Image 1: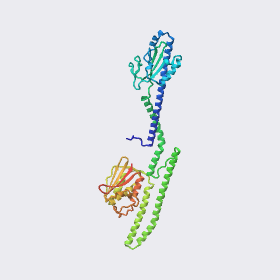
Image 2: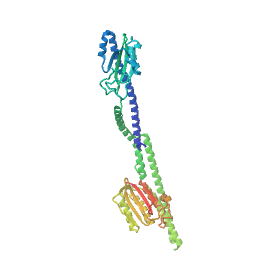
Image 3: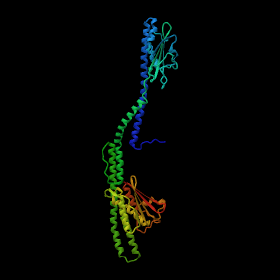
Image 4: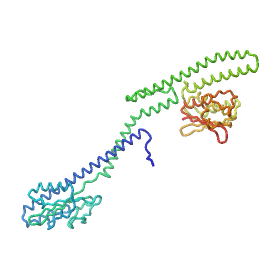
Length: 463
């Protein structure tokens, strides 16, 4: 199962930064917490050792008959002091860096004390389980107890020092363990840092990725309108260079399409003169089959010239975009064709506004509906509003198109003589013109065969 990762570049950048930040802070605080605990533990142990030095020094200076009273007076729940014939520290299986630190400290303070008569052991308490105040566990002697605050965890320092009379002076010091950072403190700290840095990161990433969004928007505008506003050439050096390159590309496309349109217009104009001359000569010919063929050929040439020019204008024109009621536009086309005798079925829905170039879009739908009525006997037109687009479908009752040729019908001058009659005088540019106009509006168009027979042209236009 894949995690639902953000799809946007900004979201992924923020996620990477936050994950790296949380992991680095977690590891840093974990290392700091462990080191801090060791430092606090050693300091507490040395503090206990200082109390032991004080008691031992006092007992050395007092008469031996006072020792029992001093021991009883020094004994409490957190700092046990006993006199016995046995060394308590000898029964403890403990060894640690703390043991070394405390031993060095005691030997430095009690210089004259024989090293073999001074035993030091440090035992760590069970992690995650506080010892009850009244319960002796493990190697603790029955006299050992804990401070009254049983909500904390304690480690214990054992020190046994042998006196000159052979008895052992035993010390048991309860050392409170330093609190862990987690889960409360660590979680709260990381959460607050993640929120603060996350908000700042979102703002910075939004500023950094804004040019990418601007490029995407500019590319979308360019696909719909070749004369769209150019990108502002501001910002960091790389953004300025990319914006300048994009604007240069847009100008090159404008020049290319303008040159193509001018070329087609010039060809159309230049061809009209010899075609007109040929038509005059044809009209002067004697009536007959040859004269009819010449006139028919000249008519077809004029139709091809006009259609080629219309194709060029379908992808490049100066008509401004505005919001148009698409339902009313399609209804006007259907009404005009119905008045001309075509079989049209259309039930106009409520108002459907789309941003478009009205004249160009009318030309596209006229071609589609005219083809359906001419080659499919009847044209059934529907307009439906989707979530973010408007769908227009044009159905007919014709023979349809072979599946392997559905995409090819939009190619210029492509005709399917087997399924569509060419008696109407078409030259195979109607669908190409419609496709070019729909694409220039940021929409899509495709053909499909209906299961009940006939062809369906489906058009999507963004609203």
